Amino acid sequence: MGLLRKVLVPFAGLVLAFCFYSVREDFKPEMLQGKRVIITGASTGIGEQMAYHLARMGSHILITARTEAKLQKVVVRCLELGAASAQYVSGSMEDMAFAKRVVKEAEELLGGLDMLILNHVGSSYFGYFNRDIEHVQKLLDINFLSYVTMTVSALPMLKGSGGSIIVVSSMAGKVGFPFVAPYSATKFALDGFFSSLRQEFVMQNINVSITLCILGLIDTESAMKAASKVYMVSPAPKEECALEIIKGGAFRQREVYYQYTSTKIPLLIRDWAPGLLDYLIRRNYNLESIKEN
Ligand SMILES: NC(=O)c1ccc[n+]([C@@H]2O[C@H](COP(=O)([O-])OP(=O)(O)OC[C@H]3O[C@@H](n4cnc5c(N)ncnc54)[C@H](OP(=O)(O)O)[C@@H]3O)[C@@H](O)[C@H]2O)c1
Ligand SMILES: *[C@@H]1O[C@H](CO)[C@@H](O)[C@H](O)[C@H]1NC(C)=O
Image (cartoon, rainbow, N blue to C red; front, side, top):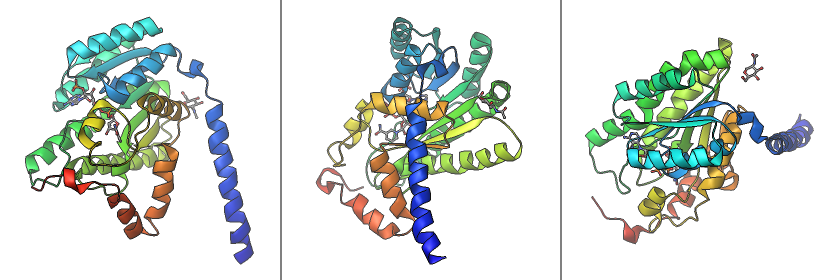
């Protein structure tokens, strides 16, 4: 038994690592050609970059966010880059009626759906928990409940196409990070809900994949503005991040870790030495730039 463990476990690890990396090298942009995709939170940041990648791959794109002027610009750029079609719907995901409407628009404009990319996040603060319960509730609506609402509305179309749901989460959705308590709660909720749903889909033979994306710090404008003075970690590029998310979705992976070394590797410590991981995380903060509530 001892020998079996000493030899088999590392061997299985190597085989898995090999499969993981070789699968990713087979990615072909044609996999997304002609696919009908909704991307939420696509007026800026990672969502905007995902729209550009999918445009280059020739997908039909429906983007959404609140700021109409930005969405218009992203649509124009998507068409220049070669999107099969590109359209937008503007509105706020605080409103569940709007979340449903986006899916309805996809049905009318695209006649179906192959990929639902849930990526938007409401703005929050970066600092000690300020005891504002209403903010927690509002953020749960935007970051969690609207994801569930869109999933429910889109499921009939996704079942029809054997489609995919991509849920963009964070390291803060797997382990506790300071200064983002409300945000962290919404991301943990996504993991619980969508991991449970994935199990049920397998049991019910529903051929809709669910890919949860665990991201480290990414160099989007909003993240840099919120965290760059306090959180002393070098960010990864949003363009590459966006591509890795799309690849993971196309391969129907259960989870995407980006960047691998700053997400998957630390999480390996989590269950065995959670105190150590907490300590390593705390070391990355410059507390002088954080104000007490
Ligand atoms: N950047 C990072 O370091 C990082 C790290 C881990 C995980 N993530 C995750 O990656 C995803 C994208 O992050 P990002 O940095 O690209 O974000 P971002 O640049 O701040 O973009 C957020 C998007 O959500 C939209 N949005 C905000 N409030 C909304 C509302 N009430 N209703 C509808 N749309 C709304 C914004 O557009 P409008 O303002 O026009 O509505 C924007 O398009 C998020 O799920 C985030 O949690 C990011
Ligand atoms: C599930 O859907 C995918 C993508 O649409 C397809 O390639 C695969 O063959 C389907 N699997 C089954 C069991 O129908």
